[in-house]
Length: 278
Image (cartoon, rainbow, N blue to C red):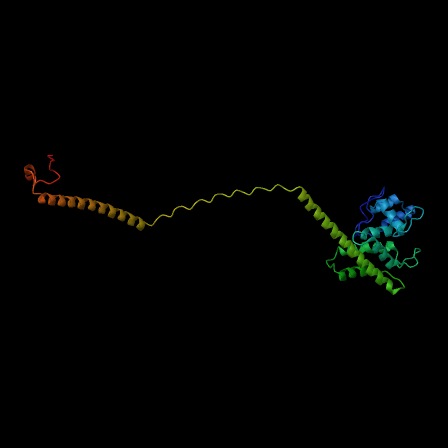
């Protein structure tokens, strides 16, 4: 349901377009009591600036007030324009109202009071909030229920009202979506202007190196056996080398024809126990 801006007149306890009530009923009660609202009171009801309302009057989109008093025809038109202006151009809103009620200033071509049209719009929007079918067919079904008691000798009047209300409802829905988008964009802009500090990445624990795999027992046995073989080979090499030296020395001694007497006496002794007499 369209809200008539959340404004209050002095001495009132509720807004003038409470959910579930026809949007213009409370205003009509005020008009009956006061005989018309002043510009400042209209501003309090609609939430608009006085200069904006005066500009609409100057352009002919709202009729001139009577004795500086705004009556139902003025206030209803102001409320309808205010509800649609964020989605529809002001010039097109004026043409839409002419499509419904004609161009005559005396209201002779009007097929519906604009206060009643505004009530239909508020009631339709309230019912739209209770249904999940927001297609055009769903909107038109809701409108048919709202205007079921409307009667006019001209059979084309109901068709025009139905078309106008369908357009007005989609315009109000688009306005709500637009405001939602602007609110979301405002939150993003706040985050851009005041970015949150980036938290440092958590330090990853060092993964321990895998323990060395123990070699099979048979491999160790092979290594030990190879070491034994090498040491044994060295020992055998040492023994053979000594024997080779002894044999070579003995051969040299037998081939030497000039041997001293002392040497002859010592021939029978091993070479490694012989004394060097030189």
